[in-house]
Length: 129
Image (cartoon, rainbow, N blue to C red):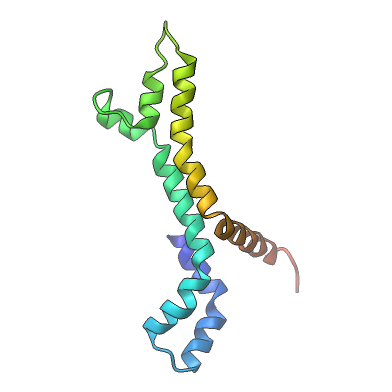
């Protein structure tokens, strides 16, 4: 959330000021200027949050144990010490990866735009002038 706030403050300052000069209300400025311009950053933040939650292992393992496992915990439970059915484990990995792949493909254009802006922001501090 801090990253998104800093992105809006730094990258959109001139646009927000121009909207205020034009007489746009605070809601109109947010809805028509800040929200569309921050869409790439919001999509990247959404992807990072989803991947972090989806692949979370330790907290569900501690809280739920083997009774009601989440997908990463269930994949770990499939790997017993003396018996490993690799085809079953790989099928589980495909099922676990599929939602992440769908999300990445759906938000692909926004993520590319956010990546360009992220690199531009990093490079901005390296040039003297």
